[in-house]
Amino acid sequence: MRLTINHTTRYSYDSPVDYALQQVRLTPPTTAQQEVHTWDLRVEGGKIETEYRDHNGAQVHLVSVDQGAQEVAITAAGEVETTDTAGVLGKVYGPAPLWYFKQFTPLTEAGPGIRALAGQLAAAPDPLSALHALSSSILMAVPYRIGETYAATSAEEAVMGGSGVCQDHAQIFVAAARAAGVPARYVSGYLMMDDRVDQDASHAWAEAHVDGLGWVGFDISNGISPDARYVRLAAGLDYSHAAPISGLRLGAANESMIVSLQIQQ
Image (cartoon, rainbow, N blue to C red; front, side, top):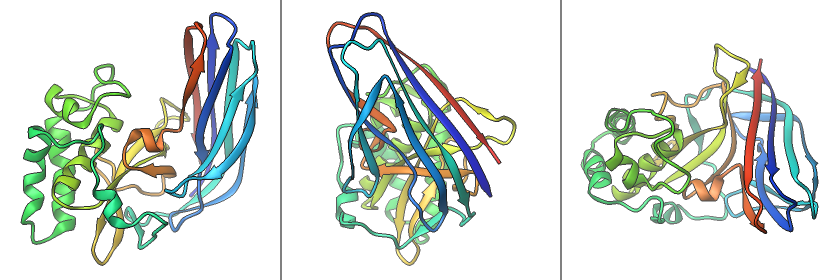
């Protein structure tokens, strides 16, 4: 499937900005599941200072905002050919060893709620089926609802709160898998919804490492493994390691953000 993507994030400030720097992970890699044909990253109201590949393999651009600016727009656009691999990325490894993906972080620390979910993985004879069952259990325990969690909400907090979005679902899955000793990671990217061109936002899912298969993806919010409608951007221990855009700002300006995302075949 050949997908055309146009994604603009526009920040507006109510007073001139003294200094701002954004860490941007909006460049998809070529993998067994996707081939990038064209891709471009453009900035209005700022500039790309440098780029590098992080320890998880993501392409990162550092974007500075022009001093005194009151608006900056970051646009990522291009075409990606995708393949349905039933969610199996495979035995693809970077510099980070598997044990690295068993580490807890403040966002994925396992409390009582996470440990209860992880229990079904402990003695499962079929790890792959158990991971699919875990995905279903998370969606039952934490139904999808917007506006009740935030970027700083931990997996345990989302479980105890009983609702969340794709970011929360992915972090809960990652935390529960790690609590059962399974390497797992958070993935950010895009999902083309079949009934629309204009998408609500970027997407998030999780991957777990299964012996014999390698990395396998699980979209908990939609109850499936990623197929040809998905485009991968970055992966890491939690949301903070793979966020499409994150950064810092100096000064007293208040910030507002508008996201425009179109994905079509």
